[in-house]
Length: 245
Ligand code: SF4
Image (cartoon, rainbow, N blue to C red):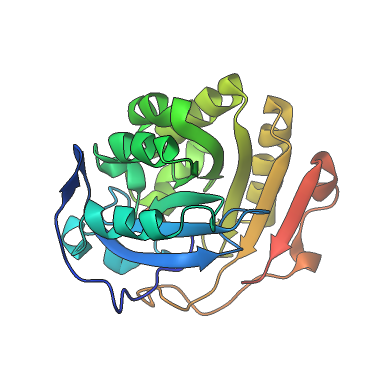
């Protein structure tokens, strides 16, 4: 999940462009960090069914946070043809909006690569959008049997695991990410997550230390450090990164 920007300078407009109906809370016109190795714009779609206490974009959990329409994104893409590698649909949870599938198709048709940040709450919509995707950043929030502790949503682990299986079966370029707050995940939980992902064939894992910025402040402002990582967990992956921001 990327930090959501304010959308200064972007006027509210038509929700629907060519059949792609979106509620967008903000757009980052240029980003080098939201899709590793690519220059992309990021559209932050409003709405999420889960309620992770560490959510850095918690104001996007409500679908009402989307004051921009699809035209804001496509106007920007029109101006940035040849200047951007692609567009990342982020949130909130972008797959909460059915229109994201058509929006991704249109963006790809315009010549942009399409990336997705997702928590995995909508495996069926993930199947629908998959043919458009070049890269996915998937949150893996907890060991599968402990997911509800983090998402506060019953049955969330099964949905996220199904989404991961879909992505692995498709062979799409994938980065998995785990946000670590010590009150929600122990070092043993982190070890279990890493072992499970590696066993499934995941090659890229990032552990992101909790940051209070942008959250609702319900968690104690404590964090973790690279030295807290369980021994050997990082070495299970071709690419591993411990992120502090
Ligand atoms: S899945 Fe959790 S962290 Fe991601 S947007 Fe929803 S509530 Fe926030």
